[in-house]
Length: 271
Image (cartoon, rainbow, N blue to C red):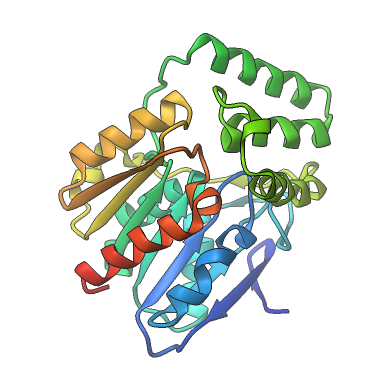
């Protein structure tokens, strides 16, 4: 299985499609790994060279406890594959990393797609009482080092959503959502230290001059909804989409709808 050695880590990655086609780099959410993109890869690879990898702390990537840059890891993979620029598609923290790359290395980014993401340095947003209680539960599980419980609570908060009843959702989606985060538990004791972008992206996104598609799930948490509105109003060439009846993982929960929106946007922007 393909791995790329970078300083302090071995990045697991997968590719599909023709190398001569326009490149797409998929960046996964913090409650998932590269498998979250399985439903979209085949359709994307029909006209694109699709690249995805597990970030440090996730999936099949291994890391030492060193300082590192998520941005540098992503660009190292593109360099390894001989890709000059790519459309970056990121969910949650993956979208934040994509925004950081677009700000720091604009020549490497042809287009930008975010799902439930915000720019680094975005100010704190007041939570609802229910969200605040759910985050307190996450903190308690973390302090108790109960990593399996923490993983379950993370999915319940983000993928299920704080206001939705899990029992009312598609059982296959619920099972998939929990599985995507469960495999990350083996990395719980790892402590690599991400190097933040300085200055952060929040006040610099106005300089991103590539086409952008900003998306969010209707039932995502309050900060993600606020970040969606901010990006949509600040990115110079942004269009937006709210996926109804989804929370933090619309590409997993509504894969066909997400795929249709994404492919239409790629085509209309010549990407």
